[in-house]
Image 1 (cartoon, helix red, strand yellow):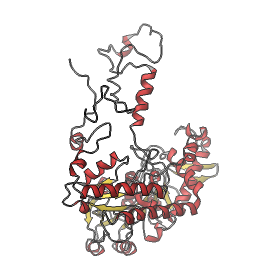
Image 2 (image 1 turned 90 degrees about the vertical axis):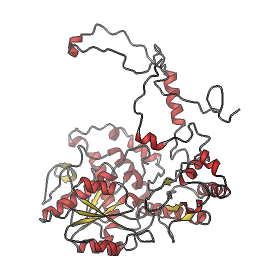
Image 3 (image 1 turned 30 degrees about the vertical axis):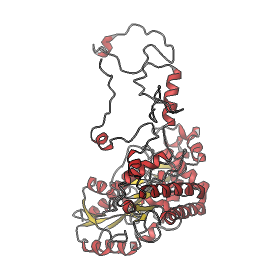
Image 4 (image 1 turned 45 degrees about the horizontal axis):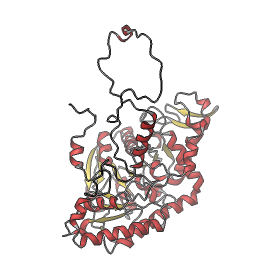
Length: 499
């Protein structure tokens, strides 16, 4: 009998779950509702329903079992080690969740009078104070929804600053080739032209190449630090000076702020704007698409161009300022309401429970854990760059040469071992990249177990086990899928089989 062949299609207690539409059982309802009275179709303009709405009829046990089974197929930070690099899938303390669900905070409405939400405004103001202290920056825009939105906000402030000086001709943004894909996209959305900067052999920005591209049309530079190769930009002071000397501004992508919190003040690096992913650095793991928040800190040169609204202390208490005040020249609004408030609460609870010393310890532990992975795997995998890393360890596929096993095959085999794979094929500047980010909350025991599995798989690949890797994953509800076809021709709507 084939390994996965059972009469039911189930595998032990892993039930083969159909789509909820396929479970439709006409007449089965979770509740009893009274028959509706006569419906006046004229109220609908004479439009009558011609067919079923397509919603399935299910009993209460069917509904509960369906969604419970789906949850059992999910993998997240609460079920196991999540080494996904460049995303900081860190532990989300339950204390922060409890605070976010407090009745006085969880049930607010964005259109309430400001005098009835003084506590909420104090949360925003207090969190803003922490972010300014941690970065050394004088101002912060709290409303951006997440990372790319924060990038857009910072670049709009840069654009407004240039236009205010009568230098609207500055429309070129320098972006390293290893940048997150949102960097050039955000620059293009703001009307800038993107000019790529190559990296040196050590994985860091080529300063000479950067200087060669500076000119009177330069608006600024977008740089991630630590960068997407998991490395600190050692020449960042010189980079900032060169950009400022050419009349440009320095935007830093703060996606990797988790590695330097409490250890480096970004203002001391010459940075003019940086978004902070609260959902990465300060709890609230963002796997699955949300939620997120991307406050953007601004230097003195950009502070007066910060968007509205922002919290200020007025004669009647805290208030949201909607227009320019005290010489401010806000470039506009970035969204309808004030940020992702639930993420603010989680982040503030995390920060206040950790304290400044705890935040510094967390970033130190994140760097320590990543370097422990790099050192423990360096003899069987191939590190992309020499020397220690920051919060994530980057390997490439050279260790798989002539084995017939690809980076994708290796990652799929990890799934059979009970691990979510590390980031694959990113950053693009490294061939066959495997990017691992253990975060600060993982214990040495957890890392040792992961290391043992990776070492075992590497040995198996080098011993000629390519066929086994090509067949992975074998133990999941679904085997390997054609992900390229799914991305190019997604099926977004279920249709009942005909006949």
